[in-house]
Length: 109
Length: 113
Image (cartoon, rainbow over the protein chains, first blue to last red):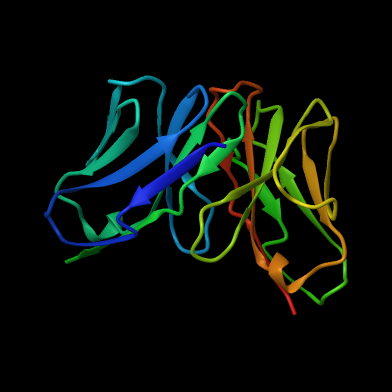
């Protein structure tokens, strides 16, 4: 059974203080690893898809990386508007997504 | 281009009742997946529809059923509601491919009293 573990559960940063969010996974035949951002009471918003170890993708202050066992979401100089829950999901041999519980990020001004 | 839409936004039901939630996929997408998200948890896969058939199913009882229409829109039906069914129900659309990104709608908040 595919499993995703995200850490830490919650992270509080000062504006401008860079950090990384971790996503560890076990999956039978990784077909894709996905990062989403979710604001309270709303649906997840797509950020990145990574397909193979060594792949990296960037978007504004966010950079996602992938190894054979984990993925990191690096946040550089975060702003208060980056506060949200960040979800990691994997797709294995089928297209069913298995999600982690998410990491709640709070960025203080 | 309209993204994934869901209706209704909020719904309040009592135990034992039945509910139907609706989803319209993003333009050009042919696959719809449904997820249940309890408070403080990640979304959990319920089932996926492609070509009007249920292609995959997660660990949910038969009380949860669905349908996909020829225009690719979809419905999620839940019978004999339990208090534990209270959650945010999310619809996601994609193309039929294991590597295709799923795009989510805003969700339907179901409260069972």
